[in-house]
Image 1: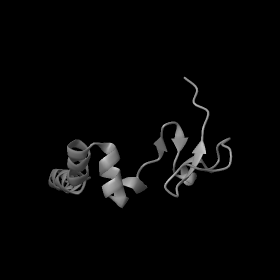
Image 2: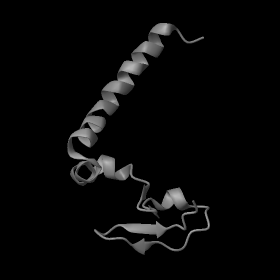
Image 3: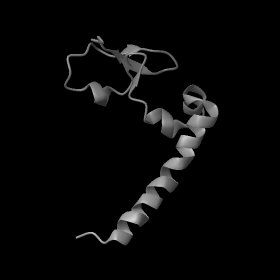
Image 4: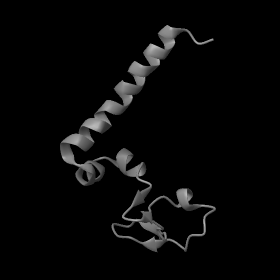
Length: 81
């Protein structure tokens, strides 16, 4: 059984780890925040219907990656709504 104190401590640790990213997104907007921080960019999986991380699209019926600008490779997915 997990003691209650550890749950509270882990919540504070998660908050401390994520708050700078949340603040950057809130202050700068997502485009500028991602442009300024490689760690945030690395967390972007889908943008404008394009899968930006090949590992995310692995195993799916996606076409080959295409150049999507700024040296990035994207997999363009068919979006069904």
